[in-house]
Length: 222
Image (tube, rainbow, N blue to C red; front, top):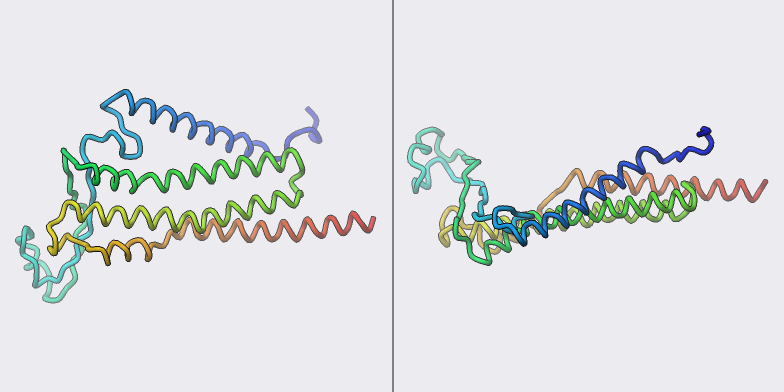
Protein backbone atom coordinates (compact mmCIF):
# COMPACT_ATOMS: atom_id res chain seq x y z
CA UNK A 1 0.00 0.00 0.00
CA UNK A 2 1.41 3.39 -0.95
CA UNK A 3 1.93 6.12 1.60
CA UNK A 4 -0.58 8.35 -0.16
CA UNK A 5 -3.38 5.77 0.09
CA UNK A 6 -2.99 5.15 3.80
CA UNK A 7 -5.62 6.46 6.17
CA UNK A 8 -3.95 9.32 8.09
CA UNK A 9 -6.33 8.77 11.00
CA UNK A 10 -5.00 5.29 11.73
CA UNK A 11 -4.38 3.77 14.24
CA UNK A 12 -6.47 6.24 16.26
CA UNK A 13 -9.58 5.50 14.20
CA UNK A 14 -9.21 1.76 14.81
CA UNK A 15 -8.64 2.31 18.55
CA UNK A 16 -11.82 4.36 18.96
CA UNK A 17 -13.89 1.85 17.00
CA UNK A 18 -12.42 -1.02 19.00
CA UNK A 19 -13.13 0.64 22.38
CA UNK A 20 -16.64 1.63 21.32
CA UNK A 21 -17.34 -1.94 20.19
CA UNK A 22 -16.06 -3.24 23.54
CA UNK A 23 -18.31 -0.82 25.40
CA UNK A 24 -21.36 -1.87 23.40
CA UNK A 25 -20.61 -5.58 23.81
CA UNK A 26 -19.87 -5.15 27.54
CA UNK A 27 -23.05 -3.15 28.10
CA UNK A 28 -25.31 -5.60 26.27
CA UNK A 29 -23.59 -8.60 27.89
CA UNK A 30 -23.75 -7.01 31.32
CA UNK A 31 -27.46 -6.24 31.03
CA UNK A 32 -28.36 -9.69 29.70
CA UNK A 33 -26.10 -11.56 32.11
CA UNK A 34 -27.43 -9.60 35.08
CA UNK A 35 -31.00 -10.29 34.02
CA UNK A 36 -30.47 -14.07 33.95
CA UNK A 37 -27.78 -14.56 36.61
CA UNK A 38 -28.24 -13.63 40.25
CA UNK A 39 -24.49 -13.66 40.94
CA UNK A 40 -23.53 -10.85 38.56
CA UNK A 41 -24.11 -7.11 38.66
CA UNK A 42 -23.93 -4.22 36.23
CA UNK A 43 -23.70 -0.59 37.37
CA UNK A 44 -24.81 -1.65 40.81
CA UNK A 45 -27.84 -3.58 39.57
CA UNK A 46 -27.72 -7.15 40.81
CA UNK A 47 -25.41 -6.59 43.79
CA UNK A 48 -26.57 -8.50 46.84
CA UNK A 49 -25.30 -5.77 49.17
CA UNK A 50 -25.26 -1.99 48.88
CA UNK A 51 -22.24 -0.19 50.33
CA UNK A 52 -20.99 3.36 50.59
CA UNK A 53 -18.00 5.07 52.17
CA UNK A 54 -18.82 8.36 53.92
CA UNK A 55 -16.37 10.98 55.09
CA UNK A 56 -16.46 11.89 58.76
CA UNK A 57 -15.44 15.34 59.93
CA UNK A 58 -15.66 16.16 63.61
CA UNK A 59 -13.86 18.22 66.23
CA UNK A 60 -11.37 16.49 68.48
CA UNK A 61 -13.32 17.34 71.61
CA UNK A 62 -16.68 16.12 70.28
CA UNK A 63 -18.52 13.03 69.16
CA UNK A 64 -17.47 10.06 71.22
CA UNK A 65 -20.30 7.99 69.79
CA UNK A 66 -18.72 4.84 68.41
CA UNK A 67 -15.36 6.63 68.11
CA UNK A 68 -13.79 5.91 71.49
CA UNK A 69 -10.11 6.72 71.54
CA UNK A 70 -10.05 9.24 68.70
CA UNK A 71 -10.51 12.27 70.95
CA UNK A 72 -7.30 11.71 72.86
CA UNK A 73 -5.27 11.46 69.64
CA UNK A 74 -5.72 15.10 68.63
CA UNK A 75 -5.61 18.58 70.12
CA UNK A 76 -8.90 20.26 71.10
CA UNK A 77 -10.76 21.85 68.19
CA UNK A 78 -8.67 19.85 65.70
CA UNK A 79 -10.66 18.71 62.70
CA UNK A 80 -10.39 14.96 62.19
CA UNK A 81 -11.07 13.26 58.86
CA UNK A 82 -11.93 9.59 59.01
CA UNK A 83 -11.77 7.71 55.71
CA UNK A 84 -12.54 4.15 54.65
CA UNK A 85 -15.50 3.84 56.99
CA UNK A 86 -17.76 1.59 54.94
CA UNK A 87 -21.46 1.11 55.55
CA UNK A 88 -23.24 -1.86 53.95
CA UNK A 89 -26.69 -3.40 53.92
CA UNK A 90 -27.22 -7.02 52.82
CA UNK A 91 -30.96 -6.45 52.44
CA UNK A 92 -31.14 -3.01 50.79
CA UNK A 93 -34.40 -1.28 50.03
CA UNK A 94 -35.41 -0.29 46.50
CA UNK A 95 -34.47 3.32 47.26
CA UNK A 96 -30.99 2.27 48.30
CA UNK A 97 -30.56 0.16 45.18
CA UNK A 98 -31.59 3.06 42.92
CA UNK A 99 -29.30 5.51 44.71
CA UNK A 100 -26.44 3.00 44.57
CA UNK A 101 -26.87 2.56 40.81
CA UNK A 102 -27.05 6.32 40.32
CA UNK A 103 -23.62 6.69 41.91
CA UNK A 104 -22.20 4.76 38.93
CA UNK A 105 -24.50 5.08 35.92
CA UNK A 106 -24.07 8.80 35.03
CA UNK A 107 -20.30 8.52 34.61
CA UNK A 108 -20.62 5.40 32.48
CA UNK A 109 -23.24 7.03 30.24
CA UNK A 110 -21.08 10.15 29.87
CA UNK A 111 -18.00 8.31 28.64
CA UNK A 112 -20.06 5.99 26.45
CA UNK A 113 -21.54 9.08 24.81
CA UNK A 114 -18.12 10.68 24.38
CA UNK A 115 -16.73 7.60 22.63
CA UNK A 116 -19.78 7.53 20.35
CA UNK A 117 -19.23 11.20 19.48
CA UNK A 118 -15.57 10.48 18.74
CA UNK A 119 -16.71 7.69 16.44
CA UNK A 120 -18.96 10.14 14.55
CA UNK A 121 -16.09 12.63 14.39
CA UNK A 122 -13.77 10.08 12.81
CA UNK A 123 -16.41 8.99 10.30
CA UNK A 124 -16.86 12.62 9.26
CA UNK A 125 -13.11 13.11 8.91
CA UNK A 126 -12.81 9.95 6.80
CA UNK A 127 -15.80 10.57 4.51
CA UNK A 128 -15.43 14.34 4.07
CA UNK A 129 -11.97 15.53 5.04
CA UNK A 130 -9.99 16.19 8.23
CA UNK A 131 -10.25 19.85 7.22
CA UNK A 132 -14.03 19.79 6.85
CA UNK A 133 -15.88 22.50 8.85
CA UNK A 134 -18.09 19.72 10.24
CA UNK A 135 -15.06 18.16 11.95
CA UNK A 136 -14.54 21.30 14.03
CA UNK A 137 -18.25 21.37 14.85
CA UNK A 138 -18.24 17.75 16.05
CA UNK A 139 -15.08 18.36 18.07
CA UNK A 140 -16.76 21.34 19.72
CA UNK A 141 -19.76 19.17 20.58
CA UNK A 142 -17.46 16.66 22.31
CA UNK A 143 -15.80 19.47 24.25
CA UNK A 144 -19.09 20.85 25.53
CA UNK A 145 -20.32 17.34 26.30
CA UNK A 146 -17.30 16.77 28.54
CA UNK A 147 -17.68 20.14 30.26
CA UNK A 148 -21.44 20.16 30.81
CA UNK A 149 -21.96 16.39 30.91
CA UNK A 150 -18.92 15.86 33.12
CA UNK A 151 -20.19 18.37 35.65
CA UNK A 152 -23.72 16.98 35.63
CA UNK A 153 -22.57 13.35 35.86
CA UNK A 154 -20.28 14.01 38.82
CA UNK A 155 -22.88 16.28 40.46
CA UNK A 156 -25.51 13.54 40.25
CA UNK A 157 -23.11 10.87 41.48
CA UNK A 158 -21.89 12.95 44.43
CA UNK A 159 -25.43 13.99 45.35
CA UNK A 160 -26.75 10.43 45.12
CA UNK A 161 -23.84 9.15 47.22
CA UNK A 162 -24.62 11.70 49.94
CA UNK A 163 -28.29 10.70 49.77
CA UNK A 164 -27.31 7.03 50.02
CA UNK A 165 -25.31 7.76 53.18
CA UNK A 166 -28.45 9.29 54.70
CA UNK A 167 -30.37 6.04 54.17
CA UNK A 168 -27.87 4.29 56.46
CA UNK A 169 -27.44 7.06 59.03
CA UNK A 170 -29.58 8.05 62.00
CA UNK A 171 -31.32 11.36 61.40
CA UNK A 172 -29.58 14.43 62.88
CA UNK A 173 -26.54 12.38 63.89
CA UNK A 174 -22.91 12.80 62.82
CA UNK A 175 -23.25 10.65 59.68
CA UNK A 176 -26.47 12.27 58.49
CA UNK A 177 -26.03 14.85 55.72
CA UNK A 178 -29.46 16.40 55.25
CA UNK A 179 -30.89 17.94 52.09
CA UNK A 180 -28.59 20.96 52.28
CA UNK A 181 -25.38 18.90 52.26
CA UNK A 182 -26.77 16.63 49.55
CA UNK A 183 -27.38 19.64 47.28
CA UNK A 184 -23.97 21.11 48.10
CA UNK A 185 -22.24 17.82 47.32
CA UNK A 186 -23.76 18.01 43.85
CA UNK A 187 -23.39 21.73 43.16
CA UNK A 188 -19.82 22.07 44.44
CA UNK A 189 -18.42 19.12 42.50
CA UNK A 190 -15.39 19.96 40.36
CA UNK A 191 -14.42 17.30 37.77
CA UNK A 192 -11.14 18.93 36.76
CA UNK A 193 -10.14 16.20 34.30
CA UNK A 194 -13.36 16.50 32.31
CA UNK A 195 -13.35 20.30 32.44
CA UNK A 196 -9.74 20.67 31.31
CA UNK A 197 -10.13 18.05 28.57
CA UNK A 198 -13.29 19.74 27.33
CA UNK A 199 -11.63 23.16 27.30
CA UNK A 200 -8.68 21.68 25.40
CA UNK A 201 -10.98 20.20 22.76
CA UNK A 202 -12.84 23.52 22.40
CA UNK A 203 -9.51 25.26 21.85
CA UNK A 204 -8.45 22.71 19.23
CA UNK A 205 -11.85 23.01 17.53
CA UNK A 206 -11.46 26.78 17.34
CA UNK A 207 -7.97 26.48 15.88
CA UNK A 208 -9.22 23.94 13.30
CA UNK A 209 -12.12 26.22 12.39
CA UNK A 210 -9.79 29.17 11.77
CA UNK A 211 -7.41 26.93 9.83
CA UNK A 212 -10.26 25.63 7.65
CA UNK A 213 -11.36 29.18 6.84
CA UNK A 214 -7.81 30.17 5.92
CA UNK A 215 -7.52 27.07 3.71
CA UNK A 216 -10.78 27.95 1.94
CA UNK A 217 -9.64 31.54 1.45
CA UNK A 218 -6.33 30.38 -0.05
CA UNK A 219 -8.14 27.94 -2.33
CA UNK A 220 -10.37 30.79 -3.51
CA UNK A 221 -7.38 32.99 -4.25
CA UNK A 222 -5.65 30.25 -6.24
